[in-house]
Image (cartoon, rainbow, N blue to C red; front, side, top):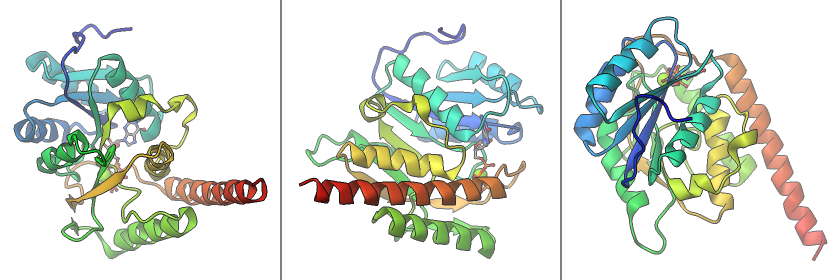
Length: 259
Ligand SMILES: Nc1nc2c(ncn2[C@@H]2O[C@H](COP(=O)(O)OP(=O)(O)OP(=O)(O)O)[C@@H](O)[C@H]2O)c(=O)[nH]1
Ligand SMILES: [Mg+2]
């Protein structure tokens, strides 16, 4: 069903999906920065009935700027589900590129043009996914406690080993996808909630035989509002990555034996 405040987008371009839960202090400034950095982009705020009024503020922003759209869900259903919903909306409206970005200011929208340039390239080996990466040369983190750095680097190292990947920041949440690559995925069964949603999406791109590149970004700890990161999200990521790693190795072995 089409939302009342959105006209069908027939042109080509990028839709930046921003999932929000209690981001009333951040949403205006991040959308303003984004549209200044990438004036051609459209934004879809996917709000999970934030008690702090984020959804209502996003509605006012949408009324003032036709590039901004909002969708409301009935409750806090998780980051992964919000993105799956937002991707579905973006595909339905014909966008050519789908972008993931947090509302809290951790992801610099000023880097989006560089990320989009990679996935929009016409080169035969152009990637289908560009990840805004903290852990490649030129990337960095600002104001992150050592504990978070260790967790992110450790989680990435674990995922690299278990899944046999060479990417440095597979859990990163600032990403630009070619829409056709997302369209080719069956996202109806994705139930990953936190970081493992990002790992899951990366594997789905690689499994289609497409390239993934990392574009360095400076990641900043949020300055306002509360983190929704939890121990449960870390545990979920560890368990899922282990499960996927074992599954993929078994499948590879079966392939060898079956030959
Ligand atoms: N719609 C929706 N958005 C969510 C949900 N959980 C988190 N978000 C949003 O997802 C983005 C990332 O959440 P954060 O709390 O910043 O989590 P994080 O970046 O992994 O953790 P920190 O580094 O501690 O900030 C933010 O824009 C949140 O508002 C959810 O259940 N539903
Ligand atoms: Mg954050």
